[in-house]
Every structure is written in structure tokens, then in C-alpha cells.
Amino acid sequence: MSSPLGETLRRARLSKNVTFEDAERVTRIRREYLEALEREDFTKLPAPVYARGFLRSYAGYLGLDPGELMPFFPVGHVEEPRLDPLPEVEQPRTWNMNGVLAIGVVGLLILLVVALYSVGHEDTSPLLQSREPAALGNNSQNVIVPPESSNAPAAAGPASALPDLAGQSLDDAVSIVQETGASVSIIYVKQGDVPVGQIVNHQPGPGATVGRGDVVTLIVSQ
Image (cartoon, rainbow, N blue to C red; front, side, top):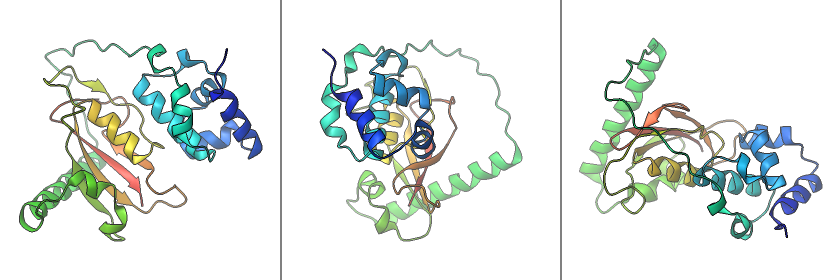
């Protein structure tokens, strides 16, 4: 007996006259994954941590409560990807000038935020600040979210390939990055018609290998 998950998503999409192309453009989730959710073809979806994020984003876009649909998502039936150990000698990365400048600016912002925290903030949680963009003002701001000890492994394991986080909610993106063991740097920007709290871009980009000791910068719509 099939669950109501796929049918609920399909009816909500049709009732709003939304095509898969519309949903893909707004949520930044590939059409094949949206179709797989509606067909309940969970073998086509990526690892559970990413697939749960896709379901939350898609359900929210259709005006549904993700919490009501999540129990029907068979997390245990989605196979976790197995990552081969990285070689000891890494290939040298080549950077263009724009990338070097962007990383330099982000690095300066990170140093500035760390200095401000150490001097003028007491008993302040960086994770809490990252959830309250209104308190940061209208200009672009940057905060650091360290990996949570409850989510990060006890010992540094193999690094993970970073998925495309564009279109994810901030909570889901932070959770995905923290599961790799990396820290999170968050920059809030005003980005046209992109919904507030949605990831616009991130550095390093999709496919980059990150792990404990690395920092992933999330660009979030404010």
C-alpha cells in the first residue's frame, strides 16, 4: 500500500497550476528529484540528509507542512553514499583572480566577525545569530557556525563532496555542511525575488571536498 506522500505533493502542485519547470526554477531542486518525490521513487534520490532537505523545501514551496509528510519518507530505504578515502597527495587547485579576491574578502569578513565576538559579545551563540537575519541590519553580514558536537563524528573521518546547496533553506544547508564536519560561514545579502532564508550560492562550490577544519561560506537571501 502506497503512502500519501507522492499523491499529496502532486495534488498540491496541480492545484496551484505549478509545473515541474516552475518548481525547479524557484526551489533550485532538479526536476528529476521533484518527479521522484511525487512518484515515491526513492531510489532516484540522493543520500537521506539531502533527500529530506529536498522534501522540506518542495513541500514548503507548495504550501504544505513538511512535518506532516516527513513520517512517510522511508529514510532507511535510501542508501547512503560510500566515499572512497582521499589520496594523501591532493591535486593542486588552480584559482582565477576573481576567485582569489572573493576568498580574500570572505576571509577578512571572518576575521572581523571573530574579533568583534571576542571583544564585544558575551554569552552569544553564533548559531542563534545565524537564525536571526533581521537583528543583523540591512547590510550584508557574516557569521560563523562551528560544527555541532552532537552531529559531527567523534573523530575526523574522510572528507565529503559538497552537494549543490542553492535553493535549500538555511537550516537544511547548515545541517548538511555540519554532517561533513566542516564549519559554516553565513553571509546575508538582498537577492531580488529569492525567498528570505534560502541559499543563493556557496563557496566552495558543488563537488568540492570538505571536512573537519574546512569552512563553507553560505550566501543567504535576506
